[in-house]
Each structure stands twice: as structure tokens, then as C-alpha cells.
Image (cartoon, rainbow, N blue to C red; front, side):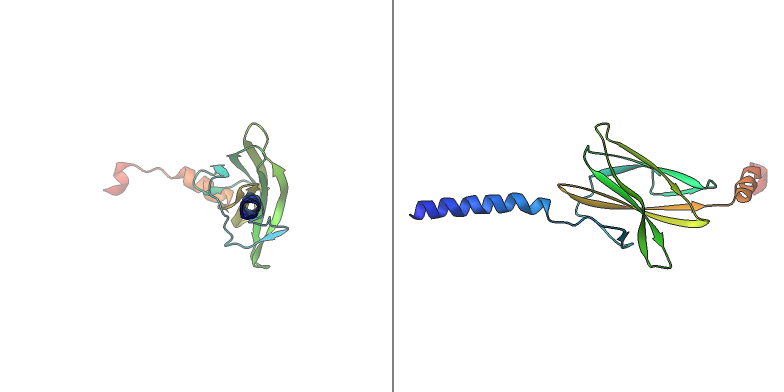
Length: 152
């Protein structure tokens, strides 16, 4: 009798232990807090921008990443008026190639994006800051010539 009870308890604990990892997080819906963080840091690797910060004069920017097949990704953009990040790119599943890429629209000045990835083993959020600078600023910067004579 004791052996049957012990075997039943062990079976129950094993079954429960297998369920916990798959339900230990909840996928975000249409909003995500700016300070959100996930349970993992290895589901995706952001390839562009390389440093999670970028500047451009373009109206759009391509965010790219790599990750395991089956990992789902959503893109959120910070809305200062609402005080939270709102969904701008719905759920996409990374395929067998492991590559992910999407184009996002940029407002003037500062743009904050949260890349949210999740699968059966956990979730991850990555903050990306992209500054949109004016074309005239880019042209002025291109026109600056720095030589040794400038310093003496």
C-alpha cells in the first residue's frame, strides 16, 4: 500500500513539474509596460540595430533578429500619452531558417520599441531605441571636414 501511494505521489510530482515551465508566464496582449522583462535572455538575438540603439533619417527602420524555430515575436511601440507600449506588429512565428525581420514606422525624434518573444520555455523582452534625425542634420554632418589643422 505504501509503495503504491509513493509511486502515485512521484507520478503526480513529475507530471506537475512538466506542466510548470509551460505555464509560468503569460503572453502580452495589445499593450506591454515599458519596463517589462522576461524570464529568459536567449530566445532571440537582435541583429539590427546591433547595439539596441540607432539613428536614421529614414521614415522606417528594419528590425531583425535570429531565434529558434517556433518562437513567436510581437513588436510594441512606446506611446508617451498612454504611458505604455502598444502593439504595432502582430504575432509572427520564426520559421526553420531562424530569421526574423520587420519594418517599423518612425515618428520624429525618439522612438522606443519593445520586442517581445516567447515560446514554450519562457519569454523575453528587448528594448530598442531609434532616433530619427532630420535630413538637414545629416547633410550638415556630411559637410564637416575634420583635419589636423582644425585642432591647431
